Length: 253
Image 1 (cartoon, one colour):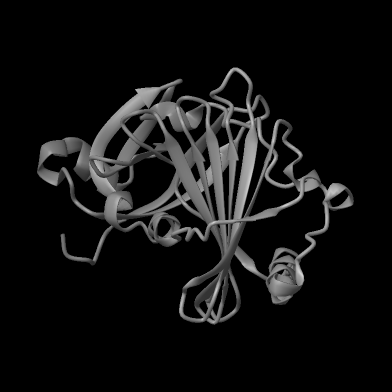
Image 2 (cartoon, rainbow, N blue to C red; image 1 turned 180 degrees about the horizontal axis):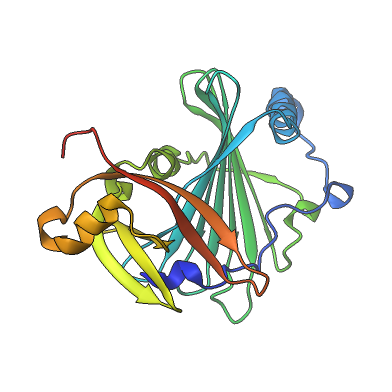
């Protein structure tokens, strides 16, 4: 449960610098896909978007995941990203772009650190207004600098964004239900989540709700809670989530 308080895997670089990126040379057949790439670059460079960070979750096998969403002033999601770190060392990044609520493009970047000779891969798919995949391109490399490698057209492959959305919205396996308490590294933690995914948050002060939960853990087990938090990284690299606010959920159990 407390894997999140260790230093996160920093081995992979999500994207190489712009100066090293290789241009995507679309054939005449797929030249219209260039507009998708331009739109993605526009979203990446839009500094006015608000960034939302999810809770950091751990499953029973020690795999961790978190997600980020970039939204505009109308609360519309324009970009989603899910980072997944496997206990084996494998790392996966999934990135999605949206326009008017419709998915336009997806990227999956995989870092195979679990292998003796690691390799790295990327898959990009482009979507029509109906959600159908127009085309998929892939590339592989023995080095992390995937952007130096040409993308080649492959079989069409859809990348589902619902998992990342569930992490952001805290639905399904990622509901914040009360699981109990834990202690480690001189800190107290409340554990929230489900049987499949849990998230731990450190607290110093026992608020009235925390006191109720502590005094009757079994009674409140699996009760849905609403939580606000702040990610903390200390000077030595020690990372954890700090509890900011905790309330009972108005949603039905």
